[in-house]
Image (cartoon, rainbow over all chains, first blue to last red; front, side, top):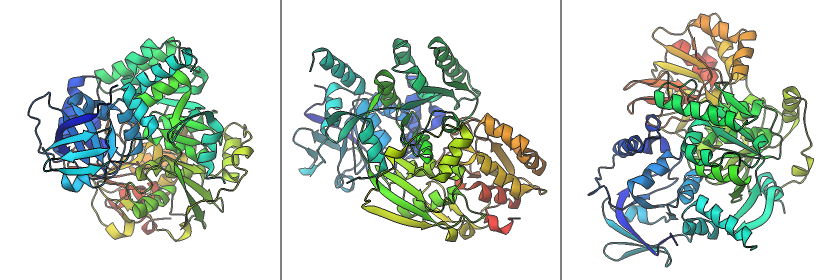
Length: 175
Length: 416
């Protein structure tokens, strides 16, 4: 099972309607992972997120507002976040292509409306995936909308392609 | 009770499997442009010979058209070699923007379910299809299986009433809707548009459906009518039978009406397609560049309107007017009809069909602090160049009129 019971990380906080052109500028579209990473750092700068990761291996959780990830379907932005150590995203709502791409790459996306006003950049966050709650320091607790069973199955498989492999194995077993 | 035509298309394409709120559906056609293809390069190489149905896939090189860097040249080469090795029957290199080529080709009919690896795949909804964009991994799943999982969106019925004034275009209608409902105003909804009086030409419908995604909609669909029928007749004479998709009348929970006869030309201000004002409200805003082209604003009616406004006039001194027809076919027709000659005489620069300008990929890149009035679909910060540059969005009529004035104006000021 690749959807852990608890996801923890440091918060990278963003606003409403964050589009993929600013998150990952198209001039950084590349097959070179280093260039994709540079694009994400440029995007962070443009978004005014003055947050620096403490180590390149630090686990991050993005907390954002409405319509997160609107715009282009270029999967580089999602792949970039994934490679950068983003373990989950919590937002008031997601743009539909971005939501699908996160799920397809095994990055869980949680909908929660109250947290954006409460969370601070750089604080620690715990997402209790089975209990359905998000915890911030000082005992602040917020429920998130339950994951759709289909979305959950993809995340548990580790993404859409491993999910497809499971579907095919299921067919072979005659299920 | 019928929930809407989008829902009906989903139900009729369902293979019977359901998980949570999602239905597994059969896909009729898939669009795969070069950047998305590039991200799937290793996966596609591995699955050689295993694409579910080659007849239902269309591969294009249109973003890097022609390539401007070595990396992009290598991507284009990989796309071309893959298409050749797989003997894909439908492929296009540098022939135009994928969303225009998709609707020019003989493949789509009302009632079909279409996926594309680009968000503006919604364009094809103008033909009465359920057409929507997805990321690379979703498209890979469909290439392997012929299927996808869809969560049926809530429908919103939009009744378009009245005659289209000569200065108004589809672009103004969609900007008006985005301005009223906001960037996420149609999140996960299906817009189902009914043009009561058949007032909107197909090119204007393409522009509207192209931009429904800027409001967060899953798709936009024009209910097929006499304009659709005429378009299909002119395209290849194969109208097809879509009766059983559109025979019932849905009971829409959400409806709205748009009276197009009273709308004014619109402009979206930087950096959001939903920050919309009437062109006359920002009259005089200075601009250095006008771009007329893209999958929203580079069709024949767009170039016809541009030529009508520019005829026997010169663009303002210091203005840069860049024109890029949406496809080679449109390019050819615009030459035959004399539109491009008129534009050249006025001082416009004609570029080849490509996604380059709109996406900040190549050509016409904006320098620090510059402002461009564009007929494309997105004006997000830095999309066309330097992060301190600004993009205003408007119809080709407003764009052409403003290129004459050297600043943003309402096209009615110079309309012949």
